[in-house]
Each structure stands twice: as C-alpha cells, then as structure tokens.
Length: 110
Length: 115
Image (tube, rainbow over all chains, first blue to last red; front, side, top):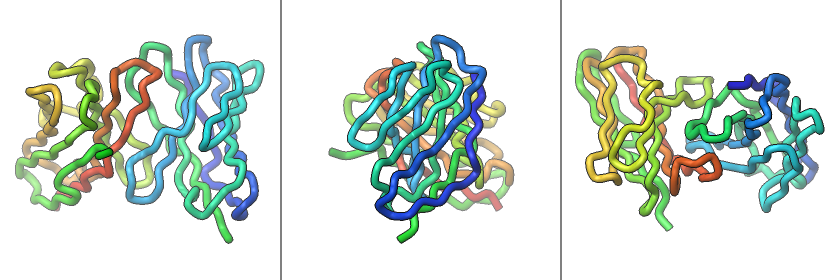
C-alpha cells in the first residue's frame, strides 16, 4: 500500500478554515484517498474519500493534486468539536480494510 | 439509529488469563472489522468478516487471538493467555458490505488492560 505522510499536529482558530495536508507520493492509479478522524475516546469517523477529482460533502472538502501525490482536507469553518486526530489513508480499489498511520492532531482553539 | 456497540467498555485482567470482547454491529451490516489501537498509534487491522466467515485474518498477531461471528451479526474477539503487550483499545467497525465504497462505522472500543 502507498504510504502517507502527515504533520504530527496543527492548530486552528475557531471559525477559520482548517487545511490538513497529506503526502502520498507513491500512490497508484487504483488507490483512493480516504480521510477519517478520531475524537478523543471515540472510534474513528469517516469524513470523505476521492480518487482524482475534488470532493465535497457536508463535513469537508477534499482537494487532490493533479498528479495525485498529495491532498488537502479542508474544514471550512472549524469548531471546537473538530478537535481530533485526522487520518489520511490510501486504500486500493477492492481492498476492504483500512491502514491507519499516526495522523494529524488538530487542535481548534477559541 | 443504534450504532456499533462494544462490551465491555473497559476490561482489566491479569497476565495469562482469557478474555472475550464483544461487538454488536449496525443491523443489516454484513461486514465486520476488528482493529487494535495502542497508545499514540493509529488503529491496526486484525481481522474482518463478510457474513459468518473470516474473509481476512492476516492482521491477527499470533494464535492466541481468535474471532468468531457464528450467525453473521455479533462477533466475539477472544484472546488466550493474555500478555501485557496485548493492552490496547480494541475497536470494532461494521459496514453494509466490504466494498471500498462502503463506509466503515466504528464503535467506541474496549480498553483492555493486562496487569
């Protein structure tokens, strides 16, 4: 599986956009980019996924570079409840399980 | 609706003992996954079921770990002769199917402490 690299931690002010980067320079053509987050003492929660086009849902936007070697998860208006560890995962088509790294700890402050 | 539930929420046991961890998936979800999360790490895959059968058990660390899902719903993760290194949060997830587009819904986990 392709490896991902994420910053260990990031800070964001409440109400501002949080932009979380992920590097996946060895990604293959049949591998999707997934984002999950884990709030303290809870199980991970699905956020969004994409292949090569940008994606948006009610939680976030996913921007994937044209060469697909990196992506950015955008939380448009971060709230205190968005404080969590965010995991960027590369998952091959047809592969059922998730391979988590250490993720990025996002701290949203007032 | 009800999400994935796991019992117990916390389990403390002594080295060498046997433990069972239970997972109740979302009703109708055919795929069920077990992960283990050590402190400061991301979850690590252990085993997954599609229906009653284990479709992939490549993540089980050794033969002390075993999981069952006899009726295709509830699953039990069993750990024999527990060791201190087994201490972790054990997470269960379920999804409608095991395709890449099926979102996995996670339970809150069982925190296992082996003394």
